Length: 337
Image: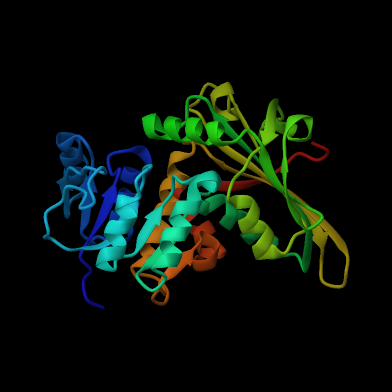
């Protein structure tokens, strides 16, 4: 395989972008990386720590991103919100694979339409799921022991001190402005819910109950359509994580509840937490890095042009192996909790 050109990581100085770059450097030491940020000195510091990396500044208000015609890149990674879609258009015009994580369910329409209008231009990985698709992949990994799944319920806790820096805070604010309703799949129907119907309790890994609510997130249609489960819901709470209550840094915790039947029709249910002691950053970075690896053909077959989601491209078992390498783990949920 020929050595690819450099991967352009927009938002490469942020938590998700820099974390993804570090993983890619560990997995593929010779892969060139370009760290793009508004602050050139900060971008240079990140690039210098990585090695085999360069630093640039970009201007998302410009169609050319403020970049010179050369060098050529191998992929464009938007680890930040690009309200004008200039990064996507830049990738399409040059036939480069593209990955984004900040559109969310409420903002993907322009991205999807742009991809449909130029369906043959480039692979587009829409990874605006929770933690860039890693939670979906974790749930699908747990789902493999089922013959049929009736219900999937995801319950996520985000520590208020672990919102991902200024870009992450801005994303949360934008999504909450777009809608306060949640989207669920109920009896096979995708349904918007709000008010009391959307409100719920979210239990942390140490048993503490936090007020939460169903949210509109891509994980719901991804899991529903991948498993054909007629009932899917994603609940979300912001509060103090179990890690911080222990006097440690904010921890990441997502509960995965699945109900269905085993082969032969025997009822089965599982309840697990996916946890990480270092918060959401490692798993978000992992989701990006897995996507880049796949888009570049560094693992698996070449990705065809068109719109893709993480579960359509990535093997859940492989993703879970990588989660464990970064410090992520599954633990059983307490019985009757």
